[in-house]
Image (cartoon, rainbow, N blue to C red):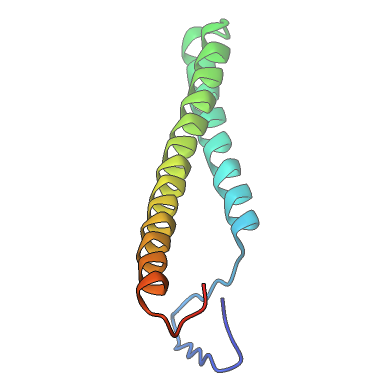
Length: 102
């Protein structure tokens, strides 16, 4: 995030977008759903409006959400590993250095 000392220079022709995680996730979800709906509309026009298009829409949304959860879980696992590795390092440091309180 931006702090008091952050300097942001915007030059002509550059789009600057400042957003938060919640807004980013909402936009991503909307983009995924819109893509899936467009595919379903195309399929309905091709097959005359059968139920296959609806099944394809549901499948597309499920797959998109599943992929997002996979990526999120990988990020959480990485962050967990970093925290536990750091904790182990710092615990050993405080136990070895008598001048540091645990």
